[in-house]
Image (tube, rainbow, N blue to C red; front, side, top):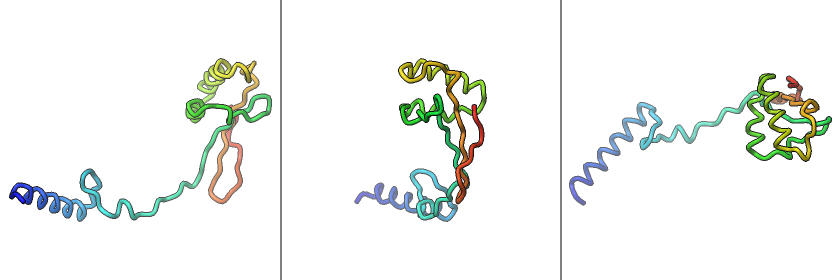
Length: 118
């Protein structure tokens, strides 16, 4: 092996040791702790459902529409989303005033509860 390659390997190992001792988790120095620590679970989960004439139509949405749904936190955005849904799903939704966006919340080891209706 050339001296330059040996020097580079030595510097990398020295950097790896230094970053492991300091606890820095950045590329290219990774230490074992960042992979061995247990993940902490969330204490509550919030999810949205769309109801049209009291029928859940959330499953009929594509992933993009479901992704946009998670931003429905205010009444103003919810109204825009309902209008967009009417044009997006004209074969299902005829009147956006009959759309209800419900935000549910589930805490760990508890039942699901309704948090808000938009």
